[in-house]
Picture (cartoon, rainbow, N blue to C red):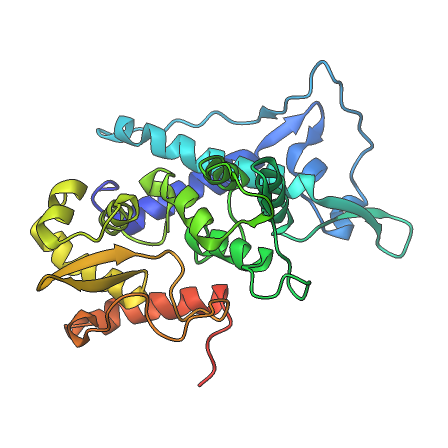
Length: 319
């Protein structure tokens, strides 16, 4: 049932992701209280601790056993879910700074959640001979760091954690960006989009159904716009899946149609043309009334998720 019910599967993996890492200890100390606790009343009761360099690993306080006839098929998904949370914990720890609660008791506070992404982009860009533009600096018209970070958040974030992206995914995407051979070359949205397109399918736009993501990645990997039959064959999806998800992706404006020699072709753009950060005032491709939301069920299926995603990731365009 879990494998065939996407919502129940997400709930199950969410339980594994958030519950298991919390149940950890280091000696007599709670791992959660050592690393993540920020409530003053709890921090007051936290015992002093020292970390032994020869033994710096925490241990789980419980052994989890998941049983079921098809549970072995979920082994990798469960491991990936736990790894995703531990990566976010490492990211959070790396950005904590000590502050005072006002009564002499120490507590910890998270730094800017997106700072690790900014650091990764700047470090990797510099290593590949790119410059990085910043808002309101002298490089007017360049695609600034804030815009690049928002692209990472949009593609890697989720509805419940829109302002977080796994730093390992960011680093892996940056590794795929080609080395610049020019002096004073600025890294762009196109460079970041290429790096993101090389990530495994399940790590792109995790809010989308897997089949829709396969369709999107097929277009991202393509050198030229693709037609219906070519997309179906390359993505290895059914015709019915294509017919449904091509419209859903078009509703997000992350894919757009082109008319080539009388035939419709599709191309993908991870950053929609209408985002406030974009300098475009019209679609990348050819506007076509037939590529909108065609059927009555699509406003119900698509509009709510799209609006939630946009509200959490962007300042919406003003009318």
